[in-house]
Image (cartoon, rainbow, N blue to C red; front, side, top):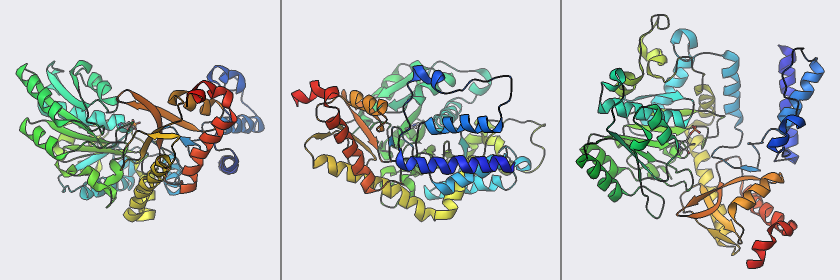
Length: 462
Ligand SMILES: *Cc1c(COP(=O)(O)O)cnc(C)c1O
């Protein structure tokens, strides 16, 4: 074991050293992957030296997500306290279904769930669980909504007439989950959004009434706290009233930006969160823990238990259900995703988590200020969001993003809203500073400057 620990320490230290110089790994085109790296599996073992050599090559050529060169998705950075927790979770290798198999780690998970419920304004009747990602916590919310609408479905199978409402700007897990849950993709209604990318309640009301008149059962509304492209927050209070009126489940998908509940300055973006039935957020996005760390909390824990518990005499042999978390989980064996969040939270306190959240909004303000002050840029996104959407000169977003990637300069993606395509820059990595944000723009500018031939046709028009 000691050799392996030494090898890990060597690889990690060398990687950290290399990342200082090279924030983006050398690009390997996908059609050359297997010729470039020896990934093949063979009959014979490798010597220790050969093994270390191929492993190092793999580690060094892998996409770098913790550096100042990665802004491509809604995660990034490397929080060392959280990494420590995750490494220990691997070493301890518990399964989170019972107290017998996980011991005090059950308490680690419970205190995170309890503290989350408390902070959003719920009492001890609330509970929650962890699942492998925001798509899965959204799935859990839909299953509870379905079972609340008709408690027989989990025995008799799905019905055809349930309807789910989500905004046009929401995450693609909703239609997938509708397929998984038996509700059906065709029963997802996409509510248009307003000019700021938030769900439009007038349209929602109209769609529900029309569905009711056709005999459908409006079952659930899925709101988003931080839409995938614009980072917009759907407004909760009025829609919650509408859901109460029609006995519908209300979920808030806060995978991207739900963590704002930890910030005095930004929790107003979740105003009314205490009114919803379930709320999910990804600590691996805004809070910067390693992937994945997704939490769902439910105002009335009865629904969690009703939809997910199953007796199993071979598994549940000691202790109360409160300590046997398999009774409220989507899975059977379940990795310990709580410990990395706990080591972070325990070490920096709730105040430290708040600072992480606030810093991302500060970095987004830096980016928006830069864009607004520079006429080569056009801004398409709005304040109080950590997604900063823009275009540079007349260059199509997808072209510049792909070229930056292929030249190993920067990883950043593009998105669109109302038919306009743009670069989507996310300030989710709280280890970044103002300088790193300004450098991002400088990198784009000098890349375009130094590669005029690639952009000629756009620059002429500019
Ligand atoms: C990222 C994201 C998800 C999916 O979360 P995963 O952990 O990637 O499965 C769902 N909804 C929104 C709004 C997201 O940003």
